[in-house]
Image (cartoon, rainbow, N blue to C red; front, side, top):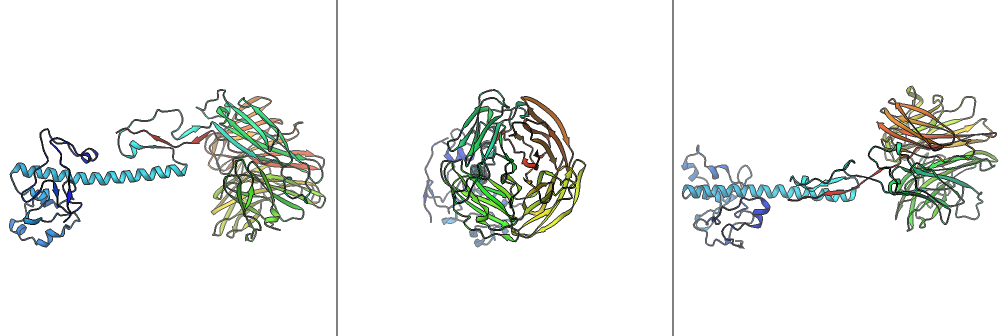
Length: 632
């Protein structure tokens, strides 16, 4: 027998479990019910665990209300073993007899004594049943709440968790704002620009040219911001070369800040206060000198710990550089894996690449995957995130074939958009292709279609099968004239980018551009555009939408802000020619999602230089985790 001593209570003195479990209070002057005859000690609970008063399980219905259809003789003939079993047919507990023939169940006592005592016993039975059910329900609610709190603390995706709502209680609501719950306007933002693409190798035996780049940064003008985002003064934007480079600052929304950087430095861009919302930056580099000829543009981005880079090839004289910048104050270890034409490449020295604090590390891709004709690089880190890009330089003998610095493509997905792909010009040696990698363990069936001003257009090589871990280059030379978007769909997640080559003659000087795939967005997109001093660089903005969209296009030229509303039909692309010396361009989707890119061109006697820039997102808000107060 299990002996459990219970604390007594006086008249009208509530127990703690009465308060927590919602049991009804005792009436004034009412004491605990006296135990039935046979209960030796009112303070001694001799019932089996889990079946004492207040813990009574659901008894059979006939134990509470009797069975009018069953004769008393049948009740008397019930097998004693059935009563002692403790389980009814429907699974409810039935409390067994105590010594002396008495039963400790309040339900059993309902059949004995005066009518008033029977009614009191039934009331206590119901109270015990409801107390048990309430405890189970509250235990389940608390467990669910704990799981939600743990998930919210780690996922980064939970906005607001209201404890009163989770416990199904009425509670006060936090003070409302004009912004959605779980979102706050950014008050700080940091970006990294990798700097020149041809310098920075930690190998004195490899000659490197002098090369520089120009960085442009700034916050979106007020006209481009979503409604409800404050645009008053009180922030700052800064650029700084790292290490020990020049710096520049600005404190006006819409103002474009520029900074020149040379050699192996990279640039850190930062915005704080009200200028953090809609902060973005880009870099530009171009040269007309032999063995450096070409133009490259790249968006400056946030540091990441998992990213994909698509560029390069095995042609003679083609060299790719993996550029890594560490914006943190501690060393970061990088692992670089490479997928190739025949599948995953056995990488030499791809693990343990250490980027020092605030440092820049450049690694030759040929040292990781020698001779790979279709490299796709997967970068992961430990110890912190990095800013990364892939520099692609092609010098065929003494003939310049072009240069590009390309930023990360969208993470593997089954639906992607390459927003701005120029079609080959007639009567030239131009080319256009799409590189697709399948990182997973299943073969991918990849479909491509061009999204033009007149709607979707099928391509000659619109369907391609790519083996697991392999990479395919798909010719899209039959793109309709102009600059088009390309939709990439697959039955397994893929990584993709388009390569464009501009060459007037097959044996002549040329240039190349990489346009990585992006994920369509309904948020603010845009950036200041680094450009040439003489305004010789021309640009076109290309906007693609899969489901159709209505957007506001905001441009800044010589300090003048112009806003144009534009509709993009489903599965279509719209092209907007940008005025020379355009300082910045921004897209504010009013309805739907879009993907956009800027194609820059520069005419020269030796040929046409070209560069592709997917328009980056310019975050305005950030997710926050909040717990609404709950008062019982």
